[in-house]
Length: 213
Image 1 (cartoon, helix red, strand yellow):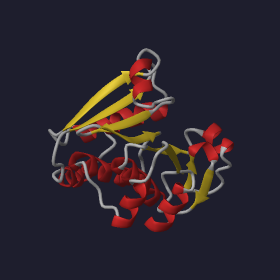
Image 2 (image 1 turned 180 degrees about the vertical axis):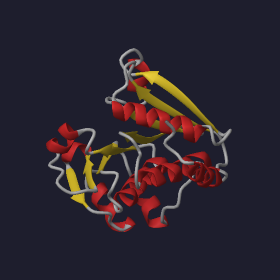
Image 3 (image 1 turned 90 degrees about the vertical axis):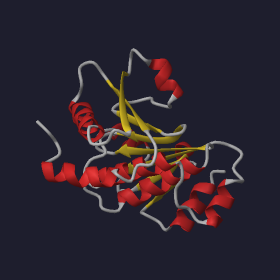
């Protein structure tokens, strides 16, 4: 059964007209798909059918571990976006609800290979020496979560020192427990070196992430 209504498809198709260059969506699932895997797979098939600039590549997680490791995938369902290169932009879980909008905006940014960050942020990110891993825990009904996900993904698109993940707190409860996720969005940097809640303005979000640098 389709996930997107005809009206939804028309709206998404209009958004995808902003794509500048081809984008490859790498999707990791398993042979006998769990319910979230099925939903994510169907959603991606419906979205990629709406633009000839989108290509969907599907991998069986257990059988294609070399590719999974190369793309930083250690759990499923997982989505990795590739434009001119593979950016550290990943989704673990279904980009559903409010996160669907963030997913579409990420597709546009990746297709362009650029994103809007302030000159101050760019200067800070240019000083990075060691890698940074950002995990933003979300739920699909949280209206504030996409802003945090987008900020983390913009940073990952700009700097190859940064990997940034959207993580569904509902689909990965063991991770939510590990990092004491009681409210969302919750951002976890470098396995807990820095953690904070809320959709913060760019300057404050970046400043907190940079504490791990």
